Length: 240
Image (cartoon, one colour):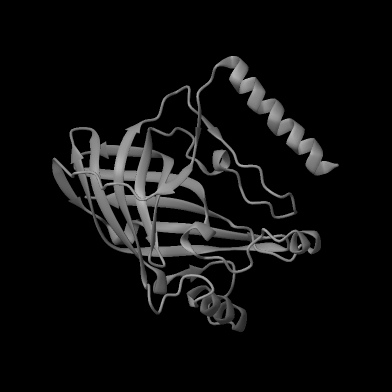
């Protein structure tokens, strides 16, 4: 009944948006696209101030942590982002809800590095290459994906997004040897030779081959024995 009720609310909200004529934008994953031609001034990524925060969910709980940045550049022309490439160290992944050095930490870290997830032995880094940037309209509404309801349902895209996005950023994300294009809202500030950017959104991990514990099995859903395919990412980027 709870799921039916939430489905009804979701549909009602969607119909209300259509009736009001508000543009609805979604966080999207698609095939890899041509990388944008970087023009203007090239800035260097500040690794100490740049991270990906991640959260993974299952019905009985969640785990979260960070993946550090190693290298990167960002191209800016006037007040426009024209390109950029960032590299993140999968082997440097941190788990922040468990005590580092503990047995549980070691088990989870090893599992995430294994072929079940990132296959870090063969793919130790992840990269993100900007393919486009466009203004975020004040009328844009971030549409949320409906999720299977449990105590630890993944956070919605509208919750993860910065409060006042300025741009829609598109880019090719490569993990585990697979490249997919993602589009997400971000707040970008360009001032005195420094660019800072914040973003929060969800991805479907299985699109990159991270398929362990795939939630699609109805039997596993009934037993609450699965890992959500949805992973929440929050980016903080700084370039000087």
